[in-house]
Image (cartoon, rainbow, N blue to C red; front, side, top):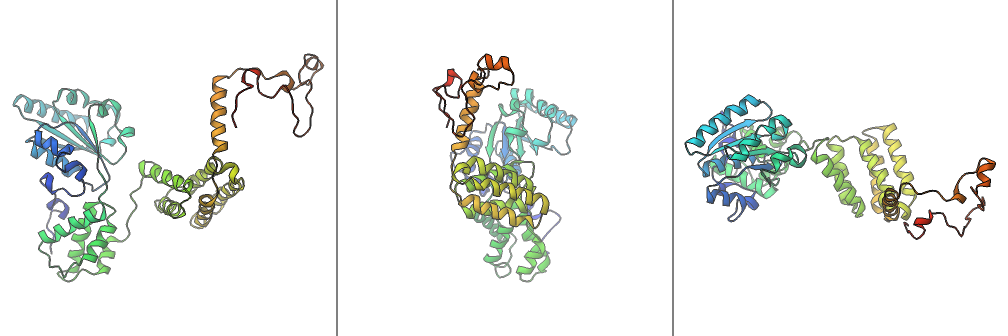
Length: 395
């Protein structure tokens, strides 16, 4: 058995900045975190990145490198009382000339009042706050706290970075190369979804199940079961994937359109949400270039409502293929926006008399509807716009 009581991911956690893999845009010489370590002067940070990208690891390393007292809280379980206890300790540290770094995991789970509690202590430097979040801090962290922190974006680890971490683990554990091949490490990396912790857990469990023998593909699959999409139907991933789908349809890229549509469906998004976006797209981005696209999109929405998953996937992909291949025109959307701007700027202009209804004799005598003829394509020298806007062009 290669494992001990401590998970492999924790045992192999880097302790120095130069050991961190996959965040070179922050850790290389001259980059932000490297400069903080060099100067020994920490600042308050918000680490924004996906699970397993190294947020906790980097916070611990920074505290070690700048010789700070490291305190850690999880926003899932911590209370305001817990925060104040750490603040008291930080104030005592400050009197002794010791820095305090407070790391708050999943800081987006703190409510406004809890986040407000940090403000005066971050402002005075009593604590150097490092918050970690998988959600967009623009929406989940209060603006007053954001203005006092530097937002640092961590990238999901790519396949090469994950493989490098796994190779390092195999070497550290002194595992013979014939037990875990390069192909199997690559498969584990692909199944990890860019999460180093997931990859190391997969390696550890696979080694345990192999009981000292070769790690087979069957063992890896049995451990991995099925890779769960990193997706929150109400969060950032949802909107990023929806945006990518629409932009791919707009660009006519059928491959990308199908990929992002499949991602949304597999992640459990409401198919009616996807269908609604297609209805909007048909008018906004295709419009007059292929008017029948709107009919198809509406029909798709009705089919999704009436058929439901899993069969309505055929309808969604059918519609996506047509929308991606259709010619595009934003004439209607652009003209609509001009019309809305004009209507907002001139909300109270009178409708010309000749365009008004005249249901009574008095109204006719006053010139309502005068000279108007009910016939197709009727032209009127007086025009149809209010006189003040006669020279305005919308379409």
